[in-house]
Length: 430
View 1 (cartoon, rainbow, N blue to C red):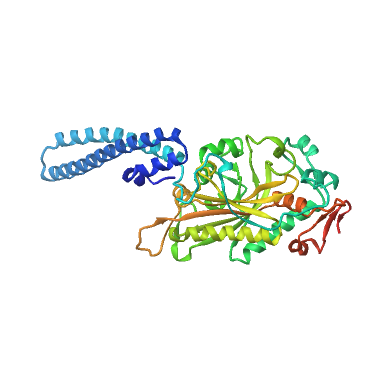
View 2 (view 1 turned 45 degrees about the horizontal axis):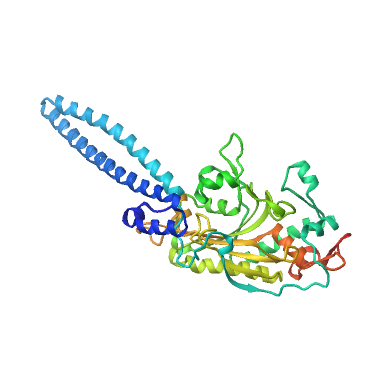
């Protein structure tokens, strides 16, 4: 959520940012909140003046009674003020709620380094790592590999749960757990505190993390309850410190969350709706940081570095892209994606998203910090990054490590978590 003081003091910063995003449809909202804020300040001023006058009248009534004098006119005026105050307070609350609603819908202010663009085709490649594998045979995609080895069953999953669900079977179940265990140890060794968060959150917690539009397009609602299935551990980790003032001397706080993720994935189409690339349910190890504003950009690069080193350890070729204004969404001020090479699709596909949300989420969740008890609290910056979304990592492993005989080699770093197994065959792990 944006700071109303920014809009009061320098609305052109917000206006230019909306134009940069090509979000011209939101310009009327900016104009509206400016007018509403002006009206709110007038109403608030009137409320303060009326309260002051009422206090003065109360003193005069008390003095008059003490002296045995009549105070009927003063009492009458006091009642008039009370009636006015009731209406004024109601108006002030209505205006405040309307202002907050608009502030919750306006996007974050972008970092200057975010490239201008319309969609994902305008994202800027930063670097590549790893050699794209060369095969002496026609490489298969994960769907064909999974079916051939009996590792994935989407047909029975569709019968049981609907489209874009799946059953992982045999070795893939163990590979999935190996990725989770390895990911958690990887971050723990780097000083991250491990969390297994709630898998459902109240609306207030979800609204702190994301925008209302995402509720409709992405998040599953629990019918009849104020609960939503989490689309990522990021949201639950943010909510952990909701409405708190943190000790700035302990920042940054670096957390690692493991959870299933539930997403509607509305609008997904094509081949992505098959297999396990774009699904309604998956597992993810997430990085999350609460940082001082002056340290958050270094933390952003650290999170990206961790994710890169993780995929380097798996020996999966990838590229890093800087997300453009048309693809970044509302919450992040700057975002990187890591895209792994998938031989079965002959292209790079997203496996990691790494964002600095500056104070946007913290302001919504009311999370602040201070260095001293006598210091005025400031909003923290929040950052998040995938370490590994395991189903997509499984796809990358299956396709990059496939062999001509149809078997799949297991990355060396994962073998200790699989009792030393080196490959997946039709007979299981060997």
